[in-house]
Length: 207
Ligand SMILES: Nc1ncnc2c1ncn2[C@@H]1O[C@H](COP(=O)(O)OP(=O)(O)O)[C@@H](O)[C@H]1O
Ligand SMILES: [Mg+2]
Image (cartoon, rainbow, N blue to C red; front, side):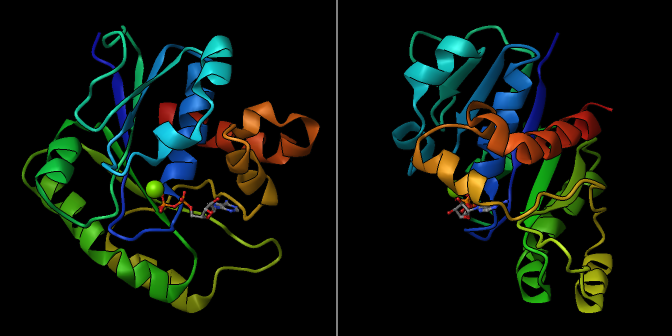
């Protein structure tokens, strides 16, 4: 069976592609073998993640941007791509053509959303060209107690891609986990809320 392929993509840097790709892949790996493709040629994941620790406990394998894994590519059910922060290009198109689901992380501010416009257009072009890819915005670093502003709502509506009904909140634990090269699943009780929202994200994707 072909794996379910999920790409984290947005032309903008700093919106949460790597954070979400990493934690999402860790959550998926608790369910079935998962490949995490570090498609950013800067290879931040490889430098950063504690592969020895995490691979012992979870069925996760890291591949570089060309899809090469140490020891060959294992059988896997889920494949997660961390895309480079570029709106377009051959690599990006290659990944998006393969993907079943594209998630565009965006910060819930109108300016940030507008900056994601070209990325959203590329996904829509692919859909218009007959690709069955499902594309969604996922709001990241949402602040507790602050309703999404009306300007953000209309920016999203103008973008033409749906927003996933699961938002990821701004939580220090995402940064602390990253500093230690770990996912939120490794951080114990203080990461419970973060784990729960990543689990909700996974359930939404697997619907
Ligand atoms: N939900 C979140 N809560 C708190 N910090 C976050 C969250 N998502 C991302 N970050 C932090 O924001 C910064 C940018 O995230 P990153 O995943 O590297 O973005 P990208 O891969 O799109 O460039 C990192 O320092 C990361 O730890
Ligand atoms: Mg990144």
